Image (tube, rainbow, N blue to C red; front, side):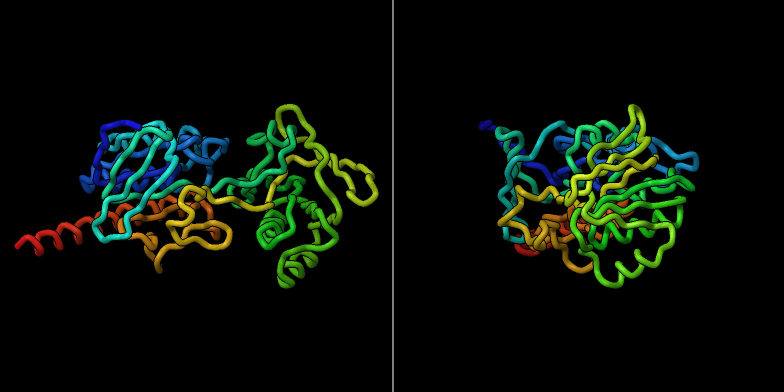
Length: 323
């Protein structure tokens, strides 16, 4: 451990749209934020080839370029961006308390406020062919990328409400949608199942799994296997959407911050406040409903404003106590 402990006003953990937007607002409020990027600087958007639905980019923009620009904007106002991974935290439960954070198992930092923007990681099937074609037709977000497959044939993997919702969303854009369900039933609600079954260009294949995603540079087809008979079959598609869930990156906060049964951080009302004073959560780490870059950025703004107001309250209380 380092003998020198740095004390800062605002620490931002994570570097996606939520983290960088929080950094822009915190820096403009003179909170002198320091950001640690985590293992994936720029977050999930760095694996997205085209971003067409973020306001202000009429011609669209690729994900990595957008994240570089967000970083440059945050740094222009004074944010210090550091490459590093927060490995443990010790949050104070006292209003006005100091939160202790360890980076890369060695560097200790004390922060008056902490904004958590660690995001969530999409679950994938784990097939080599799937991983090779991520960004080349394999996506974990139909709402983000469905537009690029307008009037094309696509497939989606999943059986829950999210998969059913994304499948019907794609059916409004694409020529045909093939839905692969691993078991002989769907986990989605009855209402969502009815919607799926009543969509004419949406076909559901039960007891079916992906054997291999076909294509060298982009998705060209799908080899499927019936897990009951072992029979394999192929279809021609240009896009494959994986809708088997997300895992919020919250493991290091377990036991200190309130979270739901799947690990998403719980925030107070419409704010970004967690159950610990001075600790705020923004982006996909606390949002399992929308998971869009623009909504993440919005909560990043909220977190910075909440942090600024929190510090103002602490300083006011200290002044009252001293007088």
